[in-house]
Length: 118
Image 1 (cartoon, rainbow, N blue to C red):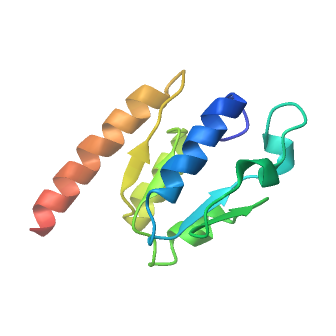
Image 2 (cartoon, rainbow, N blue to C red; image 1 turned 90 degrees about the vertical axis):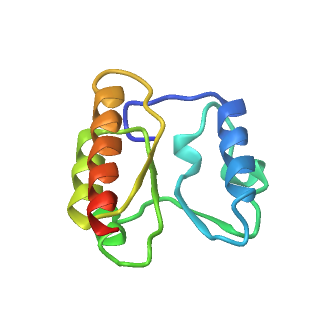
């Protein structure tokens, strides 16, 4: 969720459960023990087999790989720009600040982008 967003242990558990529901689709999650609240560890999330957590992900490289079906983001402007540049659809979960506007613009852009392709 970026460097400025803090969410609760229960919210991390809910994300883990949600990603598990995507199976058999695989999910890559930029997540480390340092991202989690208190003494919680990634192992405590009991991630499903379709979910892989990595402490660091070269986001722009991953978005440009061509195999990504969608990108889940809080809607930070760099993430939105990188996803738009690579044409990767965004599933936005805005938390605060400019994120709601950024996600709304991404939704508008991709709606127009995919309409043009059909």
